[in-house]
Amino acid sequence: MAIRSVLAPKVEIPRSLYLGLGAASVAVILALWCLLTYGGITPPDFLAAPHLVVEAGIHRLSTGSLIDDTEASLTVILAGFFFASILSVPLGILMGSFKVVEALIEPITGFMRYIPVSALIPLLILWIGIGVEEKIMVIFLGTFFQQLILISDVSARVSKDLIDCSYTLGASRRQVIWRVLLPACMPGVMDNLRVTMGWAWTYLVVAELVAANSGLGYMILNAMRGLFTDVILLGVFTIGILGLITDMIFKFARRWLLPWSAEF
Amino acid sequence: MPHLDLQDVTVRFAPKRKPEVLALDRVSLAVEDNMFSVIVGPSGCGKSTLLRLVAGLQEPTSGRMLLDGAPIVGPSAERGMVFQSYTLFPWLTVRDNVMFGPKLKGQSAAEAGRIADELIAQVGLRGFEKSYPKELSGGMRQRVALARALANDPRILLMDEPFGALDSQTRQLMQELLLSIWQKHRKTVLFITHDIDEAIFLGDVVHVMTARPGRIKKSIPIDILRPRGIDTLTSEAFMSLKRQVLGLMHEEAVIADRG
Ligand SMILES: Nc1ncnc2c1ncn2[C@@H]1O[C@H](COP(=O)(O)OP(=O)(O)OP(=O)(O)O)[C@@H](O)[C@H]1O
Ligand SMILES: [Mg+2]
Image 1 (cartoon, chains in turn cyan, orange):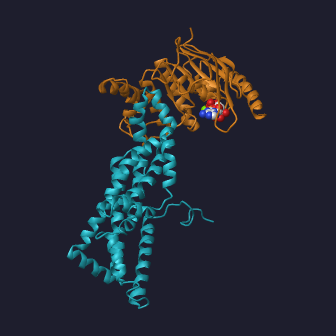
Image 2 (cartoon, chains in turn cyan, red):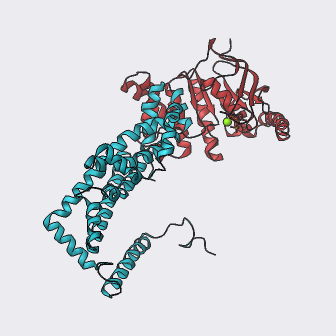
Image 3 (cartoon, protein in one colour):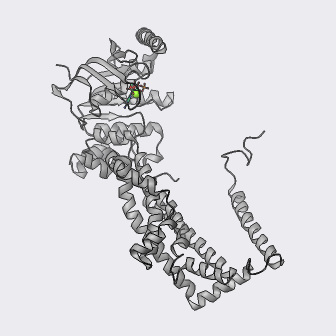
């Protein structure tokens, strides 16, 4: 048995094969889509044909409504993610390395991480209304507690020897925190921000479930009432592409900001 | 007066929900100025614990520890340490890693840079000043770690199996390099290993520890002339010292094995 076979675990495969397989899987899905729609197997109000989705896209771009919806959603996602990150990064780093902070926050995060954000929406509406703040809050709550747990883990994994070594080089406790613990956490922080950015996108439709009048999630929900599957698919693709773009931005930012760290 | 003086030092660990461990039992050890002292002992006998005590990273349960007559409290730049694991700061270049200590002390960038450049040259890494640790081999990383510890001009240099993770060829080269640098700086060194060849090759004196709870079983002066080289390893004097240390270590291994 050849252990260098492409089917052996953890064996590198040629780049051409890698890209080829990726293209093939996309092609199969597209072909299946065409077959189902143009082949007349499914009715249009079950699944819109590809050209209808493209047409819907062109139409909504020309009227500007797709741009407006994208802008509304991006505002909600970026604001929620920004506020969550700006709090979770310092708090998570402290929580992972200081037992005092861990003891204080652990019970709350341990509890909150299992609560679906959608379960909190009624309360959020009662407390902060149905404006954009409520939607930002949904994204915030959906990402903050997850980030806190992931980042505290990053901080807890910083090598004890690295910290001890800094002390023997003459660093004070304060200097160890600022000059060693903090930079040592950065690659892990970036990786987890990237992952949770992806999660933030998945909360979008939930955030725009109630009392929205613009946004990609709203667009999808609205289209559902009229069985406009072309618009639904347009919304889904737009979210997917925007998610992909933010992911790429994080990937390149990490490479650019932290050239010293190994890729993950 | 000995440079470093440990008197009846005991360390007892009381981990949560686990039985107590007596790691060190009334250890007394004197280390003379400018000497290269090596500690060998079976795995788990408390060697690292002993070194961490001297570094100030840990407190003894009881006993006294003096450096030049002053009690040791907490870590300090005057007791530099090289760890077995790679502890370079990955976000700093080789040069910035070596400059870390001098800069903390408030030395000017120019002065810190001068110290760093000289030490980098001594450990044979000229040309790698701007490299990041991820670009270096294990042996190179430990050479930088050595240069970084020396940059503080510590009163004692503590080394905890610094070459433990290296292959045997690299290890031999590192030992020779360490000796040549030591010859220049004449620092007081306390070096830990469980490799008997390494202990005898490097040391002026080898302290053999007992199995846990660790005590100093015997201190053996190594009267092999310096400079030592590859021929030392096969010399008659080396062999006879090795037989002696091996015998002591074997007794302890048997005891450790019986639990
Ligand atoms: N923080 C700790 N809590 C509890 N037990 C500990 C702690 N640190 C060390 N010990 C125990 O103390 C004993 C001595 O440990 P130490 O690391 O000093 O041994 P060592 O001689 O360096 O071993 P090795 O050769 O494997 O490096 C071991 O039994 C170890 O399990
Ligand atoms: Mg050890």
